[in-house]
Length: 381
Image (cartoon, one colour):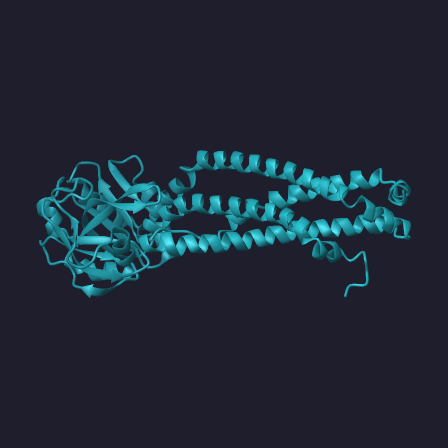
């Protein structure tokens, strides 16, 4: 039993039918904002996860001139600023993978036999089903995330002549599945050389450590800038992923700002009604000897409890719903969603801050003109 009538939890506990809706509004607002931002953030996150394999190497291809490949390779091998672990000659064709916003292009590398095991190791992968592609045969190895995304298993077609999104002159079947967190697919170099146009080699350069790889990527970009060559690095991809959604995030900021204003105004009106219903309580308590300052302190603590409590509960509900979405909708297709996205949860902070500020002003305005004598007189009459 609580003996102190000014204990902040007294009114909150005894009047849940009035305080719960106020907290519920905050919970719904926080859940909505955190959920929307997390889902939006999953788009650039998916880009980085799907193409994360490119972090392991820098790829260089000439722009339409096959005679440039050995010259470009010589520049990289002889002038490299860091020790190279391997340089591999490759080919490449394209397929389409699924994402939450549609189809995205994805490369199927053509690797020589001596490079396949090495490539698997760099991708932190190991074959769990099947075997490596035979030289010149229409066979492919894919990673487990890619297999889930496309719904493929051993023996299924990865590319075929009648599929414009995943074209190959012959039916390329999955003969191996590798367990890895990285997305990747490769066939034999000889098959792509014999069956895919243009007849141009590219190459990949691998450094020995992640730190050296980052240095190598930057050096190759600078060294070949302005030349008839195209360079592919993970850093390029990361920058594109961070900048291509700038407009989308600006629109999102406007939407969330509008939502915060609407929720705050509504909460201000509810708090005003909430305090009006308690005028008699405050008047009687002050008539009994409790100071206006102690009453004001009580109301402010009550406001802090339901605002902060509603925000924390909203974050918990948002996490639960995002986890459910991840398990039910995202994971079966290898889609990426960060259920602990701190940036998304931070977007919800303006809600409790704005609501508390408006509530603070409303309480202050109410108590500034508060007349306990008049309240008691009306109560007695």
